[in-house]
Length: 328
Image 1 (cartoon, rainbow, N blue to C red):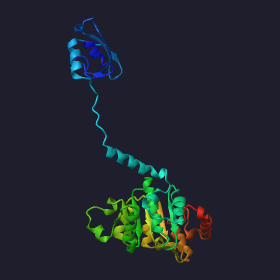
Image 2: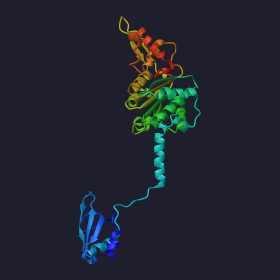
Image 3: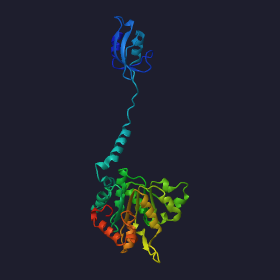
Image 4: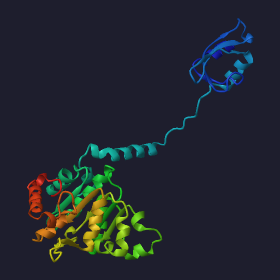
């Protein structure tokens, strides 16, 4: 009996071309008389949720049964490998929320207690990093900077990174960032810079360069015109400035080096700053005061304007010791 076969389609989608332009869900069907040839009165639900009661002929019922149940769309099984990669990428992206030292696990290096303290207790908690990391030679300042870079990238806090260091150390920085942290940096020097048709300072998002090359007048504007999320300056004490007398009762003024000018422009515009040095203080209070202004010119006043008051402000900040958000 056709009626018995049609009953099997209750709750399924069917197509009724003469009645509706879209597929409908058959909710009920009963013959108009005891004879199947008289047709059927059906109750169907349209995609918008409304109900209709069309009358269909025996021939239409036969076509429905012959065509089989309609499906709204075909379902393609997901690629298992792509699904695994999607889940793995989400796990890595959110891993820092469950492992506070995830960069240590990724790098596989053996960190020392003072490195963990500096990066995870002093630097990372800062919403806007302005930091001077002063430690003895060989204490692993490069490792600490690499941990900071990796953790901030895992948190999607930085994208464009600039590292300035002495020319002999550019290869070392590039090698250690790639070997220990899997972060690839481009080294920009004169041969690379002058032979490129496009601006490499703009094209590359992770750059290493020597301070002495970047400070050159025909280069520095292209450096500081870029937006850097994080700027790291190694041997930062070489960016020096000093107060000189104005002469004949004039107000003293500041004499700066090209390194200091470049560092000042970069630190003034970058979101996050990390200065690395083993010798921040050479016994010259005036130069040291100007050097500290690279961290935050609003916090550290100009020494030639406030004199003893500027020194008192510095001492108050230094008294914070390990609780200082600017130093370690």
